[in-house]
Image (cartoon, rainbow, N blue to C red; front, side, top):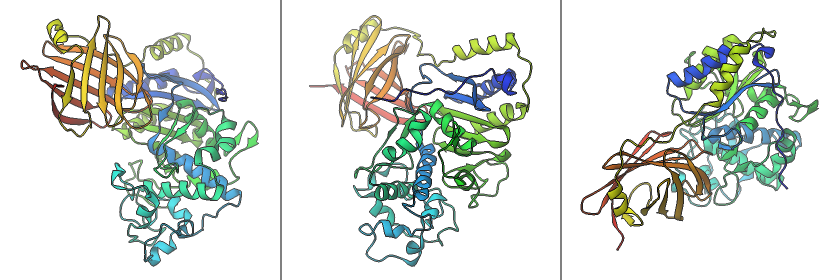
Length: 480
């Protein structure tokens, strides 16, 4: 039976010393920069003072964290060290006797667990680059075979492979997967349920990415760290762990105005303004401001992560007062109304083409080879909805799409696991029909633009929002 969600206490922002215009300014800043936020939560003095989700995204839905997952992996290592299952000074090679190269270099043999935590393994580049399809089943063997060219502990290189090795080590010393190990120690006490974690081909949690939880769960995690590991009067994190894990252990740049150059801890980034954070690609954030007793959790789908941080620094940080301030009833009503209308609208029909819909209806179009791995596409049109069937190597993906509204279904377009997707269809002009897909548990949104041709063929083009990728146009012909 799945554990019930435990919600954080709520409070008026002014009671916690935050004027409502600061929250409005934060939202204004996101909008002015065209940053696609999906959800946010602001916590001050242990209370949620503002929260919102841009429909069709929902506060209760879990969201892919990408590299924000790393901070959770680090936390698991802290638990294991406190239980005497490992030491941060253990040599990494001791945990991978069967995965080592035929000849191990002295530098590889010197690499310690703490070097994995601080991204100072001595590698020259990330050992698990985005798109690790070139690796076989044994990722650990591939990583351990990469050349170590710097003295471990001296050279920062952001390295998701290091976090993967931490997850494998954790599994091997505890005998259980990372998610299962964190359950009674972290997730259950915080009331976090429904968490999932992607696994590698050998069944280990990938560690450096792959965790999915809701925005309030991110906020709880940050609050636990803000409270120095204490939750509801009980110590959860090992004493001293928060300070050690979030302190600067290695330099990672020299730009005083860059939040990625403020130093790195144990899978936590130092920030300007005395803050620290976990973060993940496309704008997943757990920002902790110890001096202000505040946590800001954000999920999003943007390539401009710095813009989100700047919106916090410019609007929320300077507005936080040490004492409660007078409540503004009119401003509270205005903000509540605004938060209730946050949304990303479905595509608007600018035209129609009933004849083209009749010709295309039910036709399966075979697509030429393409990088998106789409094999075919078919549309079934009705007055208020459209059923879309796309085939990829994982089989037929059936998607319900609305007209002028979002409709929700599940599919496996992004990977082996099913993902919730909302979709809507509209004619942009008489020759162009656009299908918009929003994967509401992930940063990704796709426009699939289809242009029917006079000879019965179609042309399909795709644009991905979060990655800002345009896929080359794909030709499709009716299936024989």
